[in-house]
Length: 325
Ligand code: HEM
Image 1: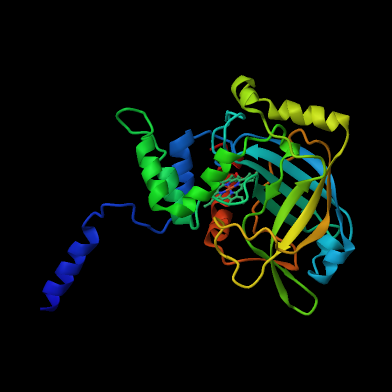
Image 2: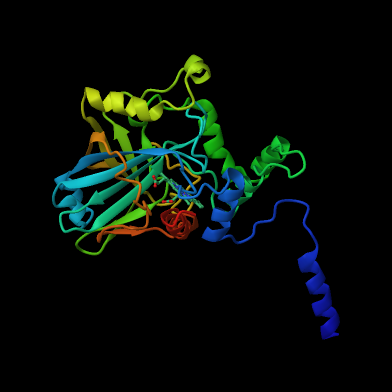
């Protein structure tokens, strides 16, 4: 009797399901998939492959000290910055409706570092690593035709609504005209820990002091596929660029572990400080790993599974690119 039961169950496990079942995925699975989508690209980042370095200074707002004991708020820190195009293609089309990224490594007075790495979109393309992995898997071209099956991509999005928010946002917002004319969002929830040990859930945003500029429909058709690195040089030759580094504070009921959900717009926002971008950084960010879980004391990551998985994926990508793979 027992044997029959286990036989039936074993059969259940191997019966293929009609739709896209969620499976657990890890950092290595993502690296394999990125290499399938964009080719091996030895020595290059497996995600956000195309990018440019910059350097600047962060000047903290003293009032932020009441939320966190981080030394980030004790004194100004040098920053090592990288702006990038989402995806693993080192020749990505910069007129396309895809996310732009920013990585900032703050080098603190005491020598510690604190990283952030965010996107130009307020939400991520999936509530979990599995949802995002499933979406990317539908973008792998068919082996026989070499074509992407866009009907499959659309069907996946419809069956997995958490992958729709970022897509819809990108359809309704033209791409940035410059890396420094875009707002950037941390997307995940983090915590600031104050001197009493209390934790304050927040999401960070980098808001440019100058107006945000996007490409017009005409520019999206006529601009070269690569213009952002040159545009950054032109913008910084005119003068330093200032960003407000802000934290939106969570209220009860806000999604703390789902980066595909935006919080309501009326959340209390506090100023963490000002980030001044001073010049381009030549190759100064090439050897940086902007792992977003590398935080200074006084900050903590949330239990967001996408955030957790990023550390492993970035470490594998970092190790591979350092060793020319
Ligand atoms: C499962 C989800 C994700 C995976 C597997 C993933 C994977 C990767 C990998 C492998 C890299 C290259 C790392 C390196 O070589 O240093 C990368 C870079 C990057 N990712 Fe992600 N990522 C994920 C989610 C996110 C999210 C949610 C954000 C933003 C909130 C983000 C923003 C960035 C940025 C800005 C970079 C470029 C950092 C740099 O300039 O070095 N990623 N990602």
